Image (tube, rainbow, N blue to C red):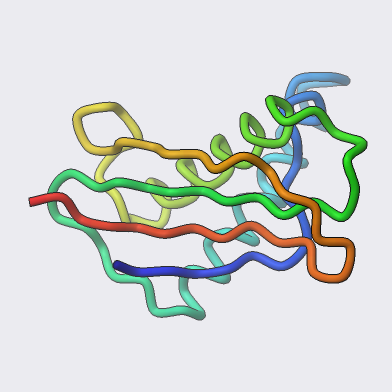
Length: 119
């Protein structure tokens, strides 16, 4: 299993879908850059076949709804992994995403990603 951590929080679904489309694209791009940078730093290797991707979000507070947190984080993580060539595609043929219930960690908000190739 390969694991990496993105410090802070990723954009939520509301941020990715509200406002002008250029702003939405900028916000998503920012999240994807962070995911790719920390995956590269952790030396995450490409997965040849099917992968299980587990995403755990640790928020600084409970202001954002869980579905907002999970939807935004999974969109940024899966698209970034695909764009970086770590997974072949983010379709069900290649990825089974698993989401943990967001937790509160005021002192260390983060997103933890676990990537496991399924034989």
